[in-house]
Amino acid sequence: LSPGQLYGDILYFATEARAGWTHSDPRPLYFWGYFVGLNGLWLLVPGLLLLDSCQQLATAQRGHDRPRHKAH
Image 1 (spheres, rainbow, N blue to C red):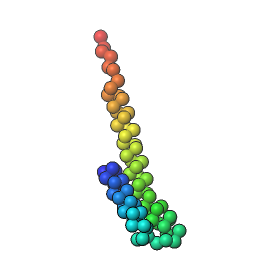
Image 2: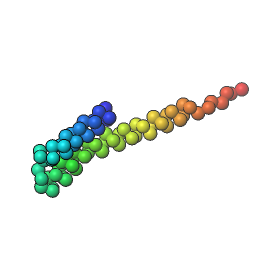
Image 3: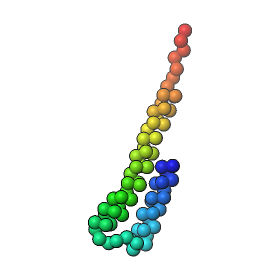
Image 4: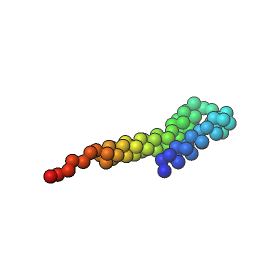
């Protein structure tokens, strides 16, 4: 789900940038505080969750790949 959220957010910002930021208020507080700051949370949270998932998967794979010693 996180990659899908990131994809949608990138499209959201990219289409607005391509339109020349015409749909956002040009005042600095609104633009940086609301538009970039609050919408940036939708990039930060899924990005962190995706990073954590990748780290956990890598740890699990290393544990699975570890050679097993046979008990005699």
